[in-house]
Structures are given as C-alpha cells and as structure tokens.
Amino acid sequence: MRRGILAFGLFVGVMALVPAFVQNAFVLRIVTELFMWIVLAITWDVMAGYAGYLNFGHGAFFGAGAYVTAILMMRYGWPFFVTLPVAGLFAGVAAFLAGIPTLRLKGAYFAIATWALALAVQQLALVLDITGGPDGMRLPPFLDPVFFFYLILAVAVATFLLLWVLLEWAPFGLKLKSIREDESGAMALGLNPARIKVQAFILSAVPAGVLGGIYAFWITFIDPASVLADIITDQAMVMAVFGGLGTLLGPVIGAIIVFSFKTIFWAYLSDYQVLYLIILGGGIALTVVFLPNGIWGTIIGHIQGRNALHKGMSLNMPPGRSPVQGADVND
Figure 1 (cartoon, rainbow, N blue to C red):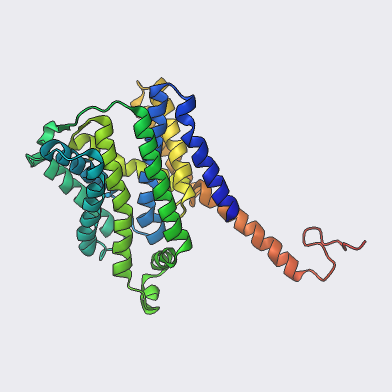
Figure 2: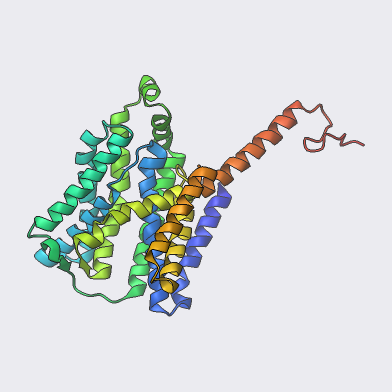
C-alpha cells in the first residue's frame, strides 16, 4: 500500500512538471485531453465494473455539466469557478432522479434505458432556447493551456483518490461488488441495493459534470454534437473494457493506450477513417476473446494465481523444503 501511494505521488509530481518542459501548446493540449478521458473512463467504470451495470448514458452527465457552466456564465454572468460545483451538483441530481427508475432495471434493459436518457438530453439541448439549440453556445475565450492542464490534472487526481478511498478502502466498494456478484444475496445480508446503486450512480456522475463544465470553458464553444455525442460514452466504455473493468488502474491504462492510438492515427492517417474504426473494433474483439478481464485485470489475475500457487505449495511442503524446488534447504 505504501509503495502504491509513493508511486502515485511520484506520478503526479512528474505530471505537474510537464508544462515546465513542454512548451508546445498542441502537445500540452493532447496531454490535458488524456487526463479528461482518464476521468471519464474511471467514472464510467464505477457502474459497469464495480456495480455490474452498463451505463450507455454517461456522456449525458458530461454534457449537462458543460451546458450548466455555459448557461451560468453567458446568461447570468457567473464566474467560471463558481459554476463548477453547480455543474457537478446538477449532474448528481440528474443521476439521482434518473437512477431511481432506471436502476430498477437490469442487464440490457438498464443499458437501453440509459441510452434513451442520453438521447432525451440531446433532444432537450436541441430544442431549448436557453441552450442555444442546434447553434450551440459560445463562451468567452481564455487561451491559457497551462491553466487548463493543471485544472483538469487536479480533477483527475481528486477523482482517482476519491474513488480509490471509496471503492478500494471503504466498505462501499465491497457492497458494490457484492451487488455485482449476487444482488439477491446482498439483499439477504441486509444491504439496500437500490440505495447503494443510486449512490454509485451519483458518484460516477458528479466528476463527469465538473469535467464537462471545465471542457466547455476550455474549448469556448459547445453544441449537442460536441458535448452530448454518443462517442463520449462509447470511447470511455472502450477504454475501460480494454484496460480492465472493476479496477481503477485498468481504465487508466486503457485510456492511455486507446487515446494514444487515436491521436497518432488521426495525426498521420486522417484520410482513412474507416480503417480507424476497423482497427479499433478488431482490437476490442480480440480483447474480449483473449483478454476478457482487460489488460490490467489479466495481469492482476496472473499475479494472484501465481501467489496462490506458491502459497499452496508452501502449505503442502514438509518443513525444511523449498516451496519452489521442493529441495531440502539444509542440503
């Protein structure tokens, strides 16, 4: 545990030094966007990996946060930083209201319900005057890539630490996993699955809403096609599945690999859009078939299996025997 904390602190420290050595605004923007996708991937995994509910409407919370920040800044003149907690709160309330009916569903029914929810939010943004309709909204430009780098890095670090505490240290994570494995059994043990699932839904939505608010100010223009598109949820889902569901490091690894591949591909092969989709789809298919637990999940599985094997061999060996070679250590 101590090594993990030290490694995490070292990583954050190295990332904090990036603007001092990277003067290229484009490269800095790429790294900043990577942090954004890491947050979206790990928050999507809260419901899918830990609770076992595939959420196809996760991007709706991101888009809702973006519109809350844009509306409060442009319609009511609020300062940017004041809008961010409101964006997160709005996303959390939306998750609460949407989660009460939808989380009663299971499997494909829940997935379809969240997908329909995302479509409904898109249509609302298209027809409401306060959102600018299909024309979108333009925010005042604030062209400081270092500012947004540190801000999104701070959100990524805070989100990771919050989820680490709640899902890996606190009993809340064990409750979610018990619901994922056997919801009826969890209820028999005295848990309230309905309440726990709604809490997890809110937990996944609030950081996405805050991130959406930052993104709106960062790109200075939003419309339904940019902040409420299906690709937001789809890409976060691909990253989490590729890296490994039900872990925190899995979606981080998946986000780094998938986003790096996407960036390199569009930088050098932008004329071959169909090829990108074919390669991405093939990669996901191969992952599901040969690495069903994702990259990090497979690595963890091998490590745990090896440790269990060595432990079993140690228990079965007579005193004075090596658990690996079975030789007498006194020879």
